[in-house]
Image 1 (cartoon, rainbow, N blue to C red):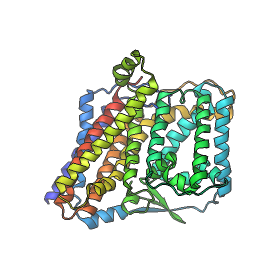
Image 2 (image 1 turned 180 degrees about the vertical axis):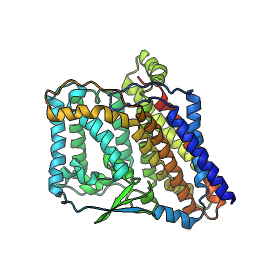
Image 3 (image 1 turned 45 degrees about the vertical axis):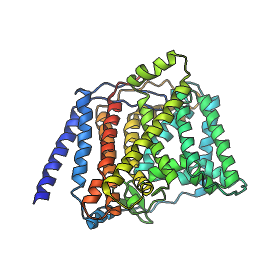
Image 4 (image 1 turned 90 degrees about the vertical axis):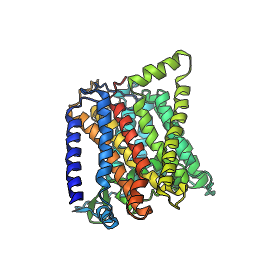
Length: 460
């Protein structure tokens, strides 16, 4: 009776706060890839709005902490809704390969010869709007299809290889460095505005990737060192869908991680760093679009004559290290509170996957409005690749801001659930698993508040 009473009132409070957040908010930021959108601040005070988000995550932990029976947790993670999959003609793999390679070459070509206006060029809109924003959403929502669509892997399979042994000490370090370098180029150069520069970077990445595949072999390179492949592999681990021969299974996000039916986790020690990198780059991309960051940090440093690329390089290194340090310190406290024999390194690896839904939720919030705004411009470049009509972005409907906030909160709530499930798999009893989660939940609450501050802050 006591559990049902608490469950009922926590549910009512959670529902009330969620409605309050939705209907007391106004337009929020949607920025990415160098094509910024403007936003307006929330109607309610920012501190109250941000605090409410943190409270929702705290309540969600209280909510899931009512589920302490391991059999029930396994039953929830094992539950799925199966829908019949209609018999459709299967796409021929060679055809997919040809299409993906053609799109790569076509994108590079139009970056060189197409109009150099970013909202009129196919390369800019395809890479940043369709692929980086839109396709990434399909990966963490519906599953990872990059293994079949990756044009660089398709090219590498037809080239000879030396098949040298990949150094085990490297692990995922090349992928983490590559992902950070990718963001450095995005925010510190004109790659998001200049189609010509974008094509040059695509050519450089193509040569580097094919060289790595030539030395170590295609499968080895794309499994360990390629940042884009690992990026999509981890996002695919939290997708809502799995597929069988004749059905589509809908389940909770992260179920594939819990049931160990994905190929992404639990990660090795060096892969934890890559997961932190995924979380950090999405946050940093949103942070640099705020007026506060530009007026208080970027512009003063530029006034001292420091190049913008150096500024972003320093903050990327510092911010990435700070994110990892905070996570690692939370794991240290978890180890102390749980009084477990499990090593700190093992806990570090086991709980890292719980951070992926946070990154996915923030990405979805960050890019939804952006995708809806600039996709019509991309459609125009398909019909008229060399002389598309002038594009004038329209104002987004008010409900976009509502879903933006919901996406952030849902991503964090999914992470709370995954962390809860991992705790009950690792620790015995009921009190020890709950107590072990306190440090990580506290970090999640702080990050939720930070994320909400970013999306409600005026943008440049």
